[in-house]
Image 1 (spheres, rainbow, N blue to C red):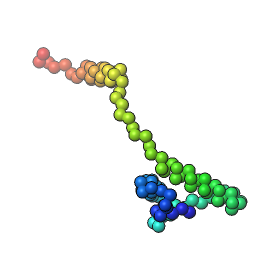
Image 2 (tube, rainbow, N blue to C red; image 1 turned 135 degrees about the horizontal axis):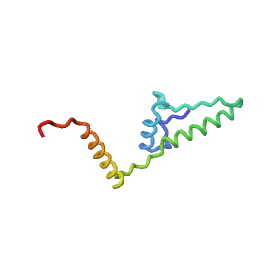
Image 3 (cartoon, helix red, strand yellow; image 1 turned 30 degrees about the horizontal axis):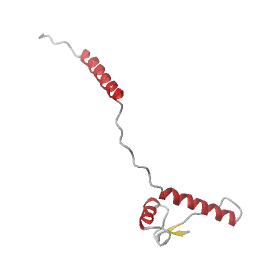
Image 4 (cartoon, rainbow, N blue to C red; image 1 turned 90 degrees about the vertical axis):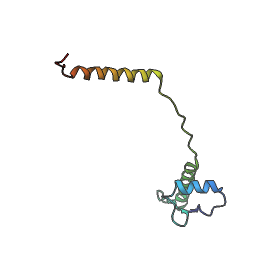
Amino acid sequence: MWNVANSTSLSHAQRRRLMNRLANRIDTTGVLRVAAAERRSQLQNRDMAIRRMNRIVQDALRVPKPRKKTRPPKRSIEQRLATKKHRSATKEKRKPVDADE
């Protein structure tokens, strides 16, 4: 168990980020609980729980890299327009011929 809401080891921004990212794992009092029961030894389970909690907190604190806006390559734009023209011509051929002309 770790009280995220009252932890002095976190800055305000880190605390807010953890509370948002781990909202489904933190209870109403601000406590993050991690349990481990894979081993028969209490000490081994406690160590596993601590490692798991560290990994969860590190993942939650990691700030994702901002996405760089990219433009599609010129070749793909030309290819898309050529395909549209080809499809348009195919559909144009399906129309009935006017008798007036």
